[in-house]
Amino acid sequence: MMNKAYDLSSYSFSKGEQILVDTNIWLYLFPAPVKPRHRFADQYSKAFSNLISTDAQPILDPMVLSEYLNRYMRIEWDGNYKSNHHEFKDFRNSQDFLKVAASAKTFAIKIVSFCKVHSVPANELGLNQILTDFSSGKVDFNDAILIDICKQKSLKLMTNDGDFQNCGIEILTTNPRLLR
Image (cartoon, rainbow, N blue to C red; front, side, top):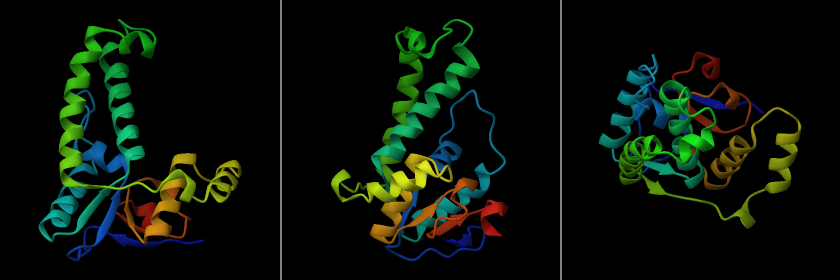
């Protein structure tokens, strides 16, 4: 099922419009220090600023925040600490982790402050369809959950993830692959 994709460079947000923001967008807006600024960061920063200034409502699912924090920590471990802590669990049990986690927590608090935190209870998710979609190999399990949430709550998804190409939801993006 094809998406309806909107190019964020020309998209006009509406007051009260609810937008589920994907993990990759948060990583562009609040990147781990070791990671160089991504070429999409400026585009998504401008779009997020427009979203906020028009009083549209960014939505945060707790799973997205979990993915953000886990990815942030792994990026830092991979870039700065892997030589001293060969396993991620060793890093997690170190003083180095505490310093990085404090920075990640600061960003997470900022993310939460922008958003309405939202979650669909697990018993209301279409888990059978989510598992079917996952087992087909066409979609990541967490992505399938976000798709289901967007469908149930009529949310648009702001993402740069090309894996969302054929999921039947409305997408806000600057990713040319998603805009085809």
